[in-house]
Length: 348
Image (cartoon, rainbow, N blue to C red; front, side, top):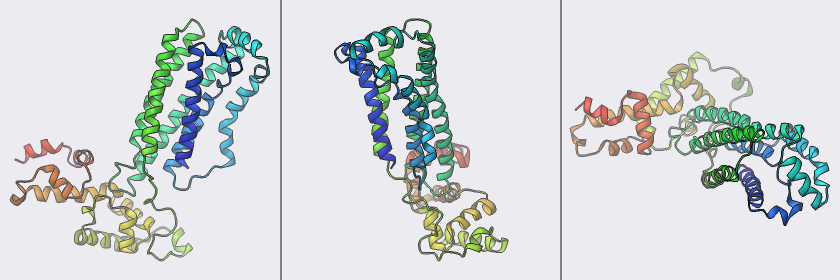
């Protein structure tokens, strides 16, 4: 679903950029029936981005009738321009050059501002969703490198900056002339952004093949509804904590690069949501920090072993369960307060 929405959004942006190219090159005079036909598409940018992120970070995202409200500005703007759409080709060119392009209409000027403000508002909304997602995946994964959507967070931030530039240009355009060169820079940046979005978006692997939904953990008998609704008892929480610590010490699942909460819960035959509750309430850590604390502890032990002096710290880190140099450096700094090189110097 996310890829389908992304494809639709890329097509919408492509049509918008292509239409601006026709305007820049003067081809509107040869195809006057196309004049203004894509001016409302910018109202789709925000909703489509929102739906893309929503379906990317939610395992059971479905389209709901309430989502149609996101398209009301798009429909209202087209209703506003309906008399223009019904004009003859020659009349369209005159009206476009004198009214729409000249922004002599107060209503169209207000619509122009609304178009420009809509996207930044949605971008802030999407950024909040991505922040929440980044915290959520740490409940289920020991390595979040390919599931945290950092690339999308970066692109959303860059698009926000670009939208502010467009907003500033639009504000200036209402009071003075904006050169063709200035607008071409904006659309060149937008084109590069679209390429980046398409590349990383279609390259993104599915996130939720391993994140458990609210159904029972595979291999574990589904608990009764009464038990599912009640919070975990203190006695069960202590017993589950002991089982978890014993499992970590003996089986060392943290040595696997991509161990998940669901896999550990299945091995212990504990409902996933109860294991998550034990981690939060008894151990005061999410799954990501819990697993990586064992990896750091193992790494420190191996660093102090003279038999490992011929190994690099990265080699020992990978052998301790870390998946990459970037994730290792980030986690190590978080748990120790020092970079790996600083730690080695301090403990030489």
